[in-house]
Length: 141
Length: 143
Image 1 (cartoon, chains in turn blue, brown):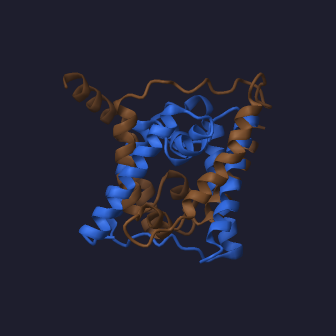
Image 2: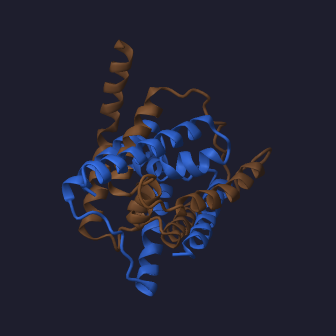
């Protein structure tokens, strides 16, 4: 659709504003995998309330929007075996790399962090190869 | 107050992910599908997000966060094998399902059973990550 890029730009602006708010007010980096991961492995016990509140907003606001303007769909593959493998890879990978699209991509690149840029290059490359293999070679997705 | 602003930031993040189309796995996979019908939307999302954040980083110089404490230290210059190996594993899973951690949480209310299974698997992966880190470090040490 022709207006997709406009919605992308607006949504992206909201994401960047959220990250800016979290940085300037709370003094923290808005990384989705780190905020959740710290709760999962206990390393974020010291600020668990802040982490849980962030995640609560992240889940609740789209839920309200879905009630008001939905239905929305993630169009996720119905193949649950692939979903499980993908989830495991994303979970392990983002914690090993200490960041995902929001932490390394948005927060890292915007401060010209070498780690953020290198991580982004590698997950984009791996993502591209993954789609190439599973869609065009194996025909699984 | 910290919790309130964390909730607001999380909510704004979730709204942005939903509006930008990033909780739709076909749009994310479309961006990664360079050899198919390529969808450039994600570039606009990333660009739109990096811009306000780049301004925010400039505002941190010589200041303190509104609610006290300190801003994050400058990024570590060291890259390391965990950064590369982790990012490759993450990217492989991201391409396979079209979900990364933020959208996986944001779409919880409308992602159905599949979304729940993805989130549970991601949490399981995060639980296993410290062990995986030790294993990768061991491999790198003996190499």
